[in-house]
Image (cartoon, rainbow, N blue to C red):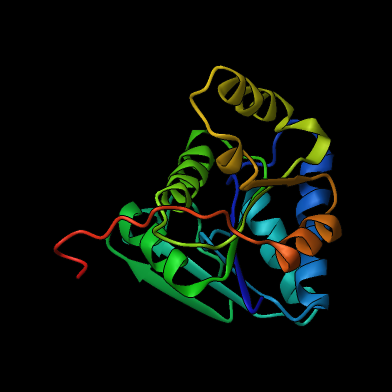
Length: 193
C-alpha cells in the first residue's frame, strides 16, 4: 500500500474520541510510509487526520472541488492540493490515486463516498480494500445493517466480507495488507473497452 484514501467528516463530532482516532490513523499511515489522500479540508476529522500525517513527516494529498475550497477551509500546508470541478471528479481522482479506502466517522457525504466506492468494488470496477474504522462504535449500527442485508439476501456474504472493519488503525491496515478480493463479475461498458 502506497496511498490510502480517507473519507471522513469536516466536523469534530460529539466525542473527542473521533479526533483522537483520526490522529491515530494519521500517525499510523505516516509510520508505515503510506500517503494520505483525502478531501483537502483543514477542519474537523478531515483536518485532524491530515495534521497527524504531516506532523509525523508523512505525505498528504488533498482533493477538493472548487466550490468547497472556502466552505471546508482548504488545508494550506498539504504536500499537494488538487482542485477539481465537482464531487464526482473528487471521488474519481481519489479512486485513481489510491490502493485502498478507509472511512472514518462523518455524515451523509462520508457515507455516500463509502457506499459508492464499496458499490464499485461489488461491481468489479476495482479490487481495492474498503474499510470502516469503527471509532467509538460509530459504525456499529451500519455493521448491523450490513449483517441484516446479508440475512435478508440483499447482500451476498462474499460482498459483505468486502467491508473490512476494525476499531484500531493498525488492525485495519493489517487487514488491508492481506486482503483478497472475492471473485466478482467485471462489468465493462462500450465506453470503457
